[in-house]
Image (tube, rainbow, N blue to C red; front, side, top):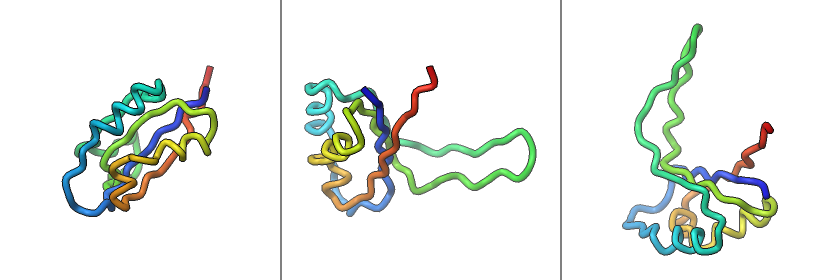
Length: 96
């Protein structure tokens, strides 16, 4: 089963967001693979000009899903999505 990552952008409407019910649902159905808020950091590279930090990402959730449509269906109840925020979904490609 493929893994997907949901990147939460910083454009949700202001207000208190309760993640516990959503995350518990993902844990109960077995799709939750981890996640976290994203804090400050830096971009680094060995040589050349360093690009700016991608500052519009605020958190991520990793899930297992049958396909992209299944992953999209998992946004129902996601508090960031429900608050009008953008969620970017990317497949995590396996290298093995």
